[in-house]
Length: 144
Image (cartoon, rainbow, N blue to C red):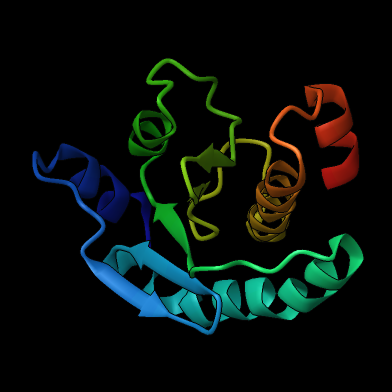
């Protein structure tokens, strides 16, 4: 798919993540554009869940929301940073992970970089569950 689809999506006033996929531990919201990569995204998250949960001795009490944004500007808005640099691949919100589309990665990134970002952000969720006051430098080091 060319950039025409992404440009059209950005121009729509009522951009929304109108599709949903539920897995054992995650609820993923996305648009039609990201349907081809959904199984890969959900597999990567689920395949890393147990490893991370065992290492940190933490389980999610509820399914975690994941948002996949095909449009970089919408990603920035969802992260609460509308003027964020375009290289941002994702971040965490309140009880959710927000990532760029692996099919439309930010400049300087590729498909797998975005998948790794989803796992990285999941580690932040777990670390924050253990101690919400973990210094940022330590939290980033743990999530690497």
